Image 1: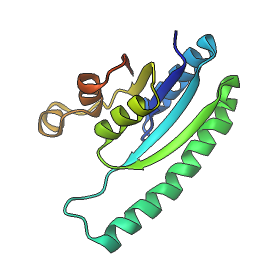
Image 2: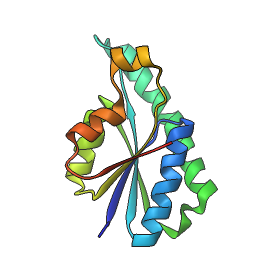
Image 3: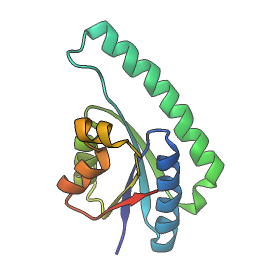
Image 4: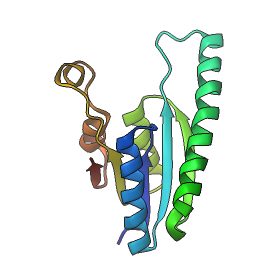
Length: 138
């Protein structure tokens, strides 16, 4: 039984598809959705720079999440939002564990081969470390 679904949201087309897929799944199982965005700050971080990055990105992400929820009407599903600072894969896995999530849904990043080789994929890392099933939506 699926009760809680965590969805990674980075404003990409893939994350929009992931959110819509999660809403449909949540509707079928009467589950709740936690829509999460992770702000990654540069390393090494300088305090004023970090504050500006977090503030700017938080405001933008709140608007995007509110717009997405309004657009979908949340399909009669309870949707909570979270904005977290840190490494995306690590924070998504942690949030899923803390909330005892039954499923994580992510959009396919579509990174090229060189970028994927150098940086790794958030969805790949989440799949590797998550303690619950992970669905990657294209």
